[in-house]
Length: 438
Image 1 (tube, rainbow, N blue to C red):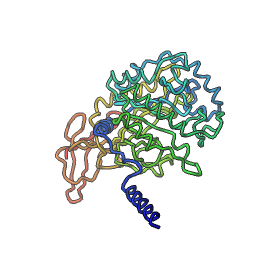
Image 2 (image 1 turned 90 degrees about the vertical axis):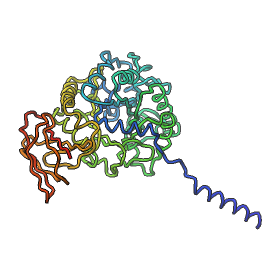
Image 3 (image 1 turned 120 degrees about the vertical axis):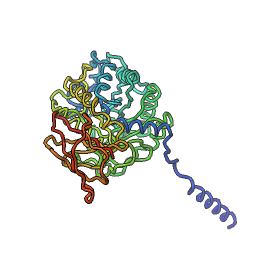
C-alpha cells in the first residue's frame, strides 16, 4: 500500500507539472517578422506566376489531373521544356514598372515538378530539362537587383509521389500505395530548407493543397504548426501563409483569400475563413486560368483590374495578380499591356493605394475608400455619378480632387453627420479620386 501510495503521488505530481507545460510553445513572431509583415501589408500589389512544365500542354496548371494523364507520360514533357526566351530581369522590370512591390512564383505545383534545383528529387528544372537553368534562382536574383520582395508558392499535395497519401485529387495519375506521410513530410521540410537556404532573399512561403484532404472521413493531420516552426527556425523573418480556405492557424503570418475579397464567399470556399488581424492578401487571375491556357483570352480590362486593386486596398488587403507565362518563357502580350497601363495609373494614384488602411466608408453605390493618416481617399467607381454622399463624423478640413488638388464643392449636414460632394466630370475610363483631410 505504501509503495502504491508513493507511486500515485509521483504520478499526480508529474501530471500537475505537465498541466503547466504546453504541448508546444505558442508561436511568437520575431521583431524582424513583425517588420516584414508591415512591409508586406504596405505593398498592396504583387504579381503571381504559375509556371511549370504544364505550360507546354497549354491547358492550365491542373492538366495532369483534369486530363486524366499518367504521371510517367506527363513527366516526359520535362525532356522538351526549353523556355529559350525566358529573361528573369526583363520580367521583373515589367512587374516593377507595373507598380508591383513583390513577386510570388510557383516553386513546385501539384504535378510535383520543382522549378528550382533540388537534391531531393531529379524531377526538377535543372536535372530533368535541356534548359538546365534554375528559374527560381534567376528570379530571386532579379528581384534583389530591382528591389522587389520575393515569395514562392509551394504545393503541399503531390499527384506524382507515392509517399503522398492520396486525397480527393490526382486519382488517375498512376500512383500506387497508400502513402507514407512521415516520409513525405520530411521531403517537404528538406525542400523548404533548400529554398530558404539557397535563395536567402525569399521573404514569404505561400502554401496550397491542404484542401485535398478536406473530405477525409478522419481529419488528416498535416502537422502544419510543426512545419511552420521548422520554417521560422530557419528564417524567423519569413512570412508564412496557407491557402487552406480555413481560419488561420498558429504559425501563419498572413491570410489569403482565393478569388475573393476578404469577407466575401462568392466561390463557396470560405465558409470557415473568418478575417483575421494578420496582413491580408487576395489572389486573382488576369484572365481565367492560373497556368497558361492557349484558349483562355478572357483578360480583364485594365479598368476592372484597377478597380479590383482598389477594392482590395479598401478592405485592407493586398492584390496578388496572376499571370501564366508561356512555354517559350515569354509573358503574354495582353498581360504585359495590362501591366503597363496599371503602372501608369499607379504612378499617379499610388499614394491612395500603397501603405493605406481600409477606408471608413465600406462599400458604397459610388465606390470605396482607403485611408492614410488623416487623409481619406474616396475612389469613385461610378463614372456617371455627379455627386456622392457618405457618413462623416465631422466636417472635413478640406475636400479636393486628388490629381489637380482643386477644391470641390460640398455640403455638410452637421445634425445628420452626412457629407455630400459635387464631383468633377469623369475624363478617363478609370475611377475619380477625392481626397478628404479630416
